Image 1 (spheres, rainbow, N blue to C red):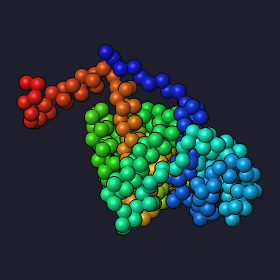
Image 2: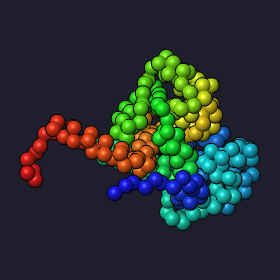
Image 3: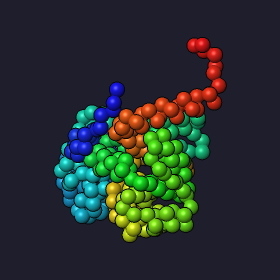
Image 4: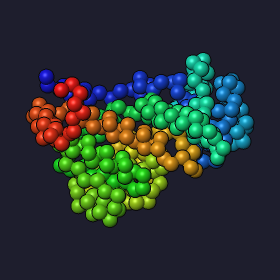
Length: 307
């Protein structure tokens, strides 16, 4: 049965955002914020039931900051202004949606294994839930279409992003997209600098402030490459250099978290790109995928079950 393309329809953000998640989103973004905005996040987390009755000036005074900082904070959590944020907090409270009771920030040297396991579980579940809530499916569809028609896809990142790049490399190969991934900045710069408009560069950086990633993005933009950035930092220089930004969200303290929740969120985005490409694959690609599966089947060891 042929696969039908997913309609290229831009979905309004409000249609895909579960408003009850706003308190979890505030918690997830906290460690990425400036000190002034972090104080606002802490005030909301600790006094959410009071914040719903405050004015902008009252929240600014309670958080020892300015009205302008409250406006910046609202933008940082993808909300138009404080009245909307206040309404979303009220919805979250009515639905009983509080920030995760046990988080990675609660793990201490003396924590028992059950507490640690629960904190990791909560961080990973939140990473998927919050990323889903904040994805712009219109932008995602544009990225998928650019990848589908690209002559080549270049993937780049440093450090822990290598795991995400390996998954991207494998999955794009599964759908026949020519892909090269690397963590070597010199190679990435050379590849993007000589590429052109028929190339997509996918750059993975949770923080958005990695110098090497910014250099590769700028080199790609100068060459006319479609630059796709997977980052949580929408206001970073890396995001500003991109053609499209996909924003995974994960709640991780800066120190000692290991970065796994952010990788989970990034892998979730890669899965969406892969399955989006697969849904648009022509019939001959399905035939090729079947040939590929038959080619590797002899290398699987049978358990004997069902034989």
